[in-house]
Amino acid sequence: MPRLNPDRLFPLDSKSRDLARGLYKSVENLPIVSPHGHTDPRWFAENQPFPDPAQLFVTPDHYVFRMLFSQGIPLEKLGVPRVDGGPTETDGREIWRLFASNFHLLRATPSQMWVEHALQDVFGLETKLSATTADATYDHVADCLTRPEFLPRALFERFKIEAIATTESAIDPLNWHEMIRNSGWKGRVVTAYRPDAVVDPEFDGFADNVATLGEMTGEDTTTWNGYLAAHRNRRAFFKSYGATSSDHGHATARTEDMPQADAAALFAKALAGKCSAEEADAFRGQMLTEMARMSLDDGLVLQIHPGSSRNHSAPMMAQFGRDKGFDIPTQTDYVRALKPLLDAMGTDPRLSVILFTLDETAYSRELAPLAGVYPALKLGPAWWFFDSPEGIMRFRQQTTETAGFYNTVGFNDDTRAFCSIPARHDVARRVDCAYLGNLVATGRLDEADAYEVATDLAYRLAKQAYRL
Image 1 (cartoon, rainbow, N blue to C red):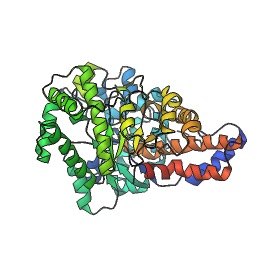
Image 2: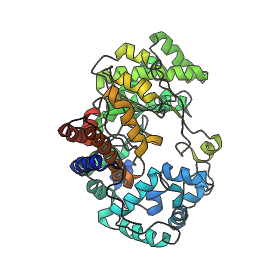
Image 3: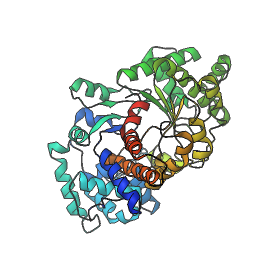
Image 4: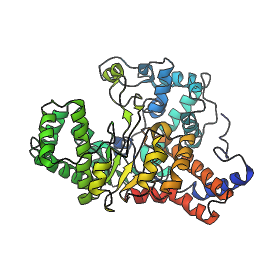
């Protein structure tokens, strides 16, 4: 493949482009702060070689395999494991050949840029990925993976990752994080508290999960007060492994602040499996407010990832399980949905709530105005379908005038694909510098200020917002 264009994603006009180049040069080598993601802590705990190129680039990356699936390529043939016991391709070379033969399907997508960036900058490959080069590229990457400098911890250090947060269920024992801590390695890998399995009455096995929560904490989770105490217990446990945030992937941004007796009655109904869809949503909303209250005590930043119709395909959910590329954006209300929580705590500067969205129409209409006035609110970066060059640029264009830069939180790579992390941060830094270059060129921002903002967006804001 031809070397990546050094001016990629920069403005076309020469004045803005020169400004963007200078700004980018000032931030391109800053450390990476990755405060929200889904890399496997086991990689860093065991520090074993990645099995093969396919398991590094293809099978963990739903950005990649969802596009190929949309063109009729079965997930089984891409090595995506099945939860129903069905057969799945395990030969990494065969998976890679299929991936390389269909790499053209990713043209002009962020995934193409991320993959090419990783192949070039991480593995030193300049061969265009295709059916004819599949075996040669596979062999090259596979050979690299046998070397000590390509072990997970070595790559972590090479990528200049200052801190990375994984995301674990509230009932995860955090064994891998314990192993990392006991290893003596200095890389900072922290966890994040993801309680969806024990706060969502519609989550598979909800009642059993809540019982497990009780067993792990010694609290009586058949009672409302015991259930809340169990959450406090687990949050403290997660904090002991470096957690600075909780993460909530709810279908909506709904919050509730009902009387405790009503919340207790709804909890009992949820445990009994008798909640309607409306009641389940109300309970999730109540738990967001309860989690915000807990944040006032323990300092965890509260992330809300609403607006995704998760696991949209019932057959694919049954065959492959959760998080297999079938999360589809939905229209999301924030102004009315967040009001109960904001009425309770929205002006308290001790609370930090980071809002994400899959509904771009909410940027300028709801999210920027909310974050531009409530001390508790910050805007998460363009996420999932919009963590792309155009999506990041639209985010800046639609939110900056109302929310400013300092009610946003930098960039989150939000990925399971480890080698794409530098590429994703590089894209964000380039787009932000392009935006800042345009502001300077059009007289809307002082050049010296732009250099300071570039560093803030690339590095400082994430550390500050996530208390890292």
